[in-house]
Image (cartoon, rainbow over all chains, first blue to last red; front, side):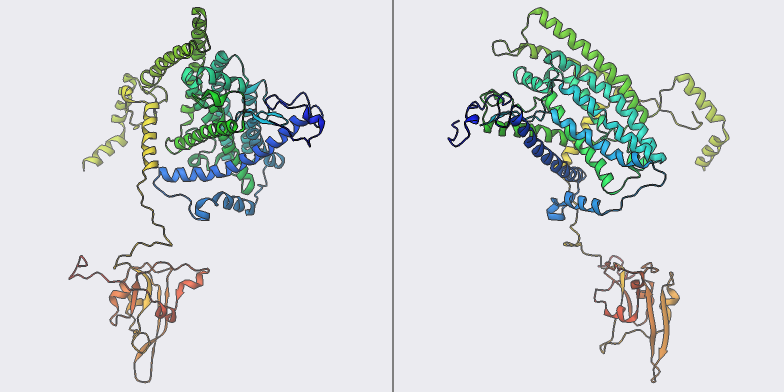
Length: 444
Length: 165
């Protein structure tokens, strides 16, 4: 790329747009990266918030279509609905219960909302963009601790919910908050453990490295299918989405932790839920579905960078994220909510042992394959290593979904009763006067 | 366990969660892409009402524009909801007419007895249902308002023609 002669001589030294701009600078050594970050921050934040607003519309539309309805179609053919909702929420009365703990009550919506936003910072969303001031990496902060940061911050989200429930001084809200703390703490463990196999394969927690590894060796959804499944289930639980929406459980707890909230504070919880969904979807896409890379098109995924590569990979990333958002909504309008004990037993008795077992299996498999001398990178153009793991995963998935999934994954509505106990109970029922009345009544 | 609770042994081999969930998702996806559309776009499009629909009342008038009502008092007598207020009057020729004729649309249960009992075919229930108001007072229809209604009236059930043919 040729630089115009009018640029100051300092800038003309930086001619390589493919290199990061960190070492030299027009505005001092940290100037250009700082400006890059601010620009990216503004764009990402704006797109993110508008996207979250549009997601509320998408949710209502998809639920309507699934239920054979039309959904919102009045305000500018439905497109103005998020705006109308926003205006409504700003105009509504802000309620503040007398018995509420006011500082915490006011703090809780922000506590729910901010972690959801900050998590987005480490997710790479497109190929780097070469600019005349140096390469712009399409990630807000490429932290070396990668998804550890995400796991840490995502666990902060529970504070908003618990504080809201406790500070409201309302029994329903408190129950919702308690349930949510139990739920999120339980599923965080399974979620964290399900990312350990990625660490085993990628050897790094940095999301850029993980994306790069998947570009070379195939998506982790193929090589780590069970981990992917567990991650998705745990992410649903972490974001309090159906079938894990016990914290708000309308039919039991009115609205759970946000029973006492109205207007914009309620809206913040709503936005936080959708922001969490976007983040979780982006995380699924990045960890298991290759991030921003386009499958089988190595030219677009690799240097030298160009603006069209950035555009295409951004499109690929958005497509993946939107697919998972759709998946979230699809699940929500299909599956009923779990009972509380089912939720707990699924988390602790099934998902947790399953992930630990899976970590052992994958660790054993990688150890075995390494010992056999199979290279991790593609070998004569064939990703032998990944194919071996794929075969292993197909076996495990078959075992899990066909053999193990026989009334055991989710505990039934009533506990299994031993035959002798059942006979005793039936005998008691025969003796009881109520039963006699019932039978004689039925005979008439 | 409480007495009388039916305990069923579940057929473990047929019970699944993941496969059942996938089946359910296939069903919802089928509806998503191929919805069974039944929604009527109400203010723009209205389904036609049955000819026997009993809605907002209407008082029919004679050719010279006065109400057909002769204040016989049959409709307030037959009204099960007691929603018709009638004060009869008489002019110098001895013709009876209603001084006050009010129907409280809130009390009315739209049974249509008033129309059936009316010897002059004056009061009718109508094929009309949009009668929202900004205040409760607006739901007491006086004679003038009943006469001003223009919607078609209900065709009552005819024993000679039970299916409305």
